[in-house]
Amino acid sequence: MTVFASATEATTGTPLVRGSSSRKTALMEAFQEGIMLAVIAAAGCTASRYTVDDGIDLQVTHKVNGVKVPLDVQLKATSAGWNASGTAISISLSRARYDEMRSTSPGMDSILVVLDMPSDQAQWSRVHPPYSLMRHALYWRSLRGMPEHPGNTKSVSVSVPRTSVFDDEILCQIMARLRAGGMP
Image (cartoon, rainbow, N blue to C red; front, side, top):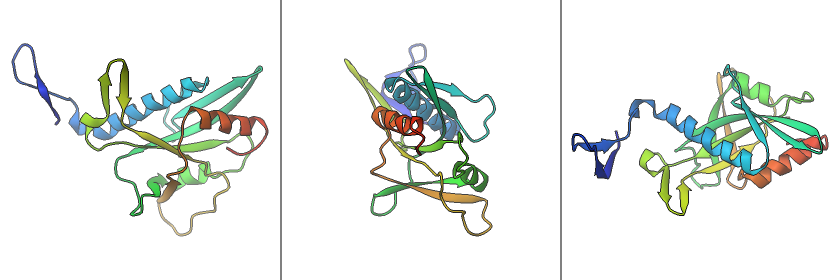
């Protein structure tokens, strides 16, 4: 439970606390989706959420000159995934999801977007008019064409380089490559 340092509840005078501390993972996912929707909007794209979570969280669509290009996005959030040298962040994917995302079938383009965020929920965001500060960084990777993972494991560790920052410009570049028939 996180207590606000300088705030109390108006009716009781008790310290103000953030709720749902037992649901931190779900809250991290909700925060990531909010950040992703902001990046998607800044890129001039639209997003649809899947009603049934089949491992893909959002479908992003980029429309230019009447031509729509879709891209499926798998979201993962972490506050502790950096390697010792700080050059890559890793997350775990189910083997089934990894195999689906490495598919080379036409029209099955997807990317993995990893959110690196502070472990302390109180550090996730701050409002300082005239701006808001969100403590995060997004990184991305396409798994298309990746090799089959050896062994009989149920999950696969996927590493994303620190240099693969995900923002609105990168999203537009990805969509342009897809529109031209290339890979993300």
